[in-house]
Image 1 (spheres, rainbow, N blue to C red):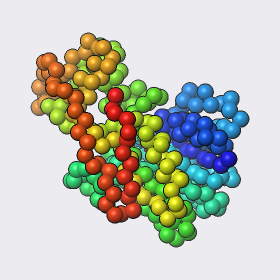
Image 2: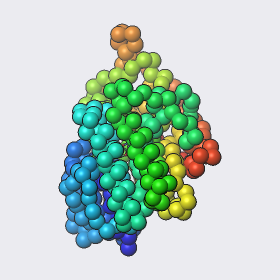
Image 3: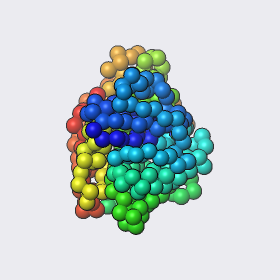
Length: 306
Ligand SMILES: NC(=O)c1ccc[n+]([C@@H]2O[C@H](COP(=O)([O-])OP(=O)(O)OC[C@H]3O[C@@H](n4cnc5c(N)ncnc54)[C@H](O)[C@@H]3O)[C@@H](O)[C@H]2O)c1
């Protein structure tokens, strides 16, 4: 039995990770300040004697004897991370330093939940781990993107300077149960609008594409990454190689929820309604997650998007 610390454990992804680690027979400490997470997400785990819940903010040091640390604490959706951008930056940077310090003292292995946003507004598609990104240090999203980039830097430096055993994964869009319905992400927005039979609004002509991985696939990738040899540190992109357009996503959500919603477009300030089906949903598989020799080992989701 391993003693495992999950920061941000009461959030969407963290709660699934705690559940998985407990099911595997581990002792799990879930640490969270409940900024975007909630006790409701982990209420079903509270009776488990191997589960411990700690209200704590990662910007201040925390000490416990642990074997592994998964560092997930950070608001992940734009309205939440822009609410207090200075705090977001502190959470990424002080949080990483405090958890890396703990890993150094306890000789624990530590995994950083980084993000595809470290690539910024990428000029190559698909992004590979060897690509350094096209980033903006002064925009309103920089508190998140640059905070995550700085935390990757801290992870690498603790590894090079102090021999801390690190793993870095860069998570692409993830969806699943316990997503916050009000966090402004496209999947939850579309589902909420469809369930209320409200118009689903798409910006532009709807041809912009995204990929979405189901949370179970991500949890599998995270635990496999943690189990890799100490010599393997990543970074590794984790996501679904199937991309589809916003129009296809909206149509899929309407079909699955049996909704009466209409799909509306908004382009150049002009609002319009898309008529009829917009072609079949295709999940074209392409190598989003290729290994490009930067230590990256690709992880592809296995579940289709629905
Ligand atoms: N969901 C995605 O699609 C996605 C994509 C890329 C990266 N990620 C990363 O995965 C991690 C988890 O994301 P999520 O979608 O579950 O978001 P989430 O907001 O549901 O979870 C984040 C958790 O961290 C906690 N937290 C925030 N600041 C904290 C602090 N200072 N101290 C302690 N706890 C704090 C929140 O209360 C919450 O429980 C984040 O680091 C995020 O950047 C997520």
